[in-house]
Length: 207
Length: 202
Image (cartoon, rainbow over all chains, first blue to last red; front, side):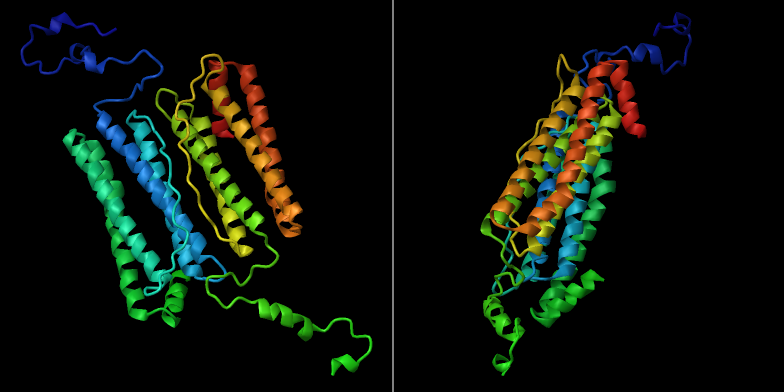
């Protein structure tokens, strides 16, 4: 019963009249069960870009799963790299899930898009498979970072500071740390060469 | 010299020479692979894709039931966990593929449904019926994998599917069938809400 207390009207210094203001159309609660009740100032563009980001994270997770399977082969046998990519795959799926949860929090609708078939061979004559795969991982992490910055940009364009903060606090810092770590790995792999060096590096990842 | 001995039934160093000649020298080939047919390898890659696809559908169902205007948190939890479980099945098959010296080939995953409303049944029952048909489909595919194993005389693969998958699949089908029956019984309003609480607390 949001009736206006008319007694308040003649009073001076009344700056906020909650029952009057709450009647505004854009605060109306939807009747249909198909519409989100919670949704507020959440732009369609933000909703769409989050669904895109879910797909990016899921695709990267799938590539890492493929890398895990490659390094786990008996004739490749780099158990440390296999472990690293297995965990990375789970982590990326976790990121996708975090965005799914967020989408629902804001009253958007999660739309899962198709996931493409990743490559399954990571041999490279000059670089060797370990370095080649790690370089690929770095470019994927940088791509993910680009996409996250794009989500942040869409948030800013649509004056959505909560979404911008969500991307900042939950993703951007972690992404930069991942890029640094994988870059370190690449430098080390380039330093040690392909034979005993790579085996030793692999042991380091394993333990 | 062993030839001169009588009663020698097993000559390891003679017999192993055949196998030794068969050890691949190319680094592109599996060393471990033994009596593992191409058909089994391909069937396992297919099954990995089946499990991954089902995992993706369950993830979409999780997102649907987690919406604020649906708010069936118990169903959301159930499908979130189911999605993870199916992904683990895929991973178990990936591990097995490598164990036998096959090559994992991850194939494309299709876009799942994202709306599970149904006028007559209601979304909870409709979602659960869909889950049941998916579990039965997975079972069909597993049985097909088993028949490929049998056809190729691959007893290890047959046993792997039996012990790691078939029982669990039958149990999942039973569980989800019970859920469907219960959802049909309780109806759409308070009943579904109560069923959902049971999933949340259980």
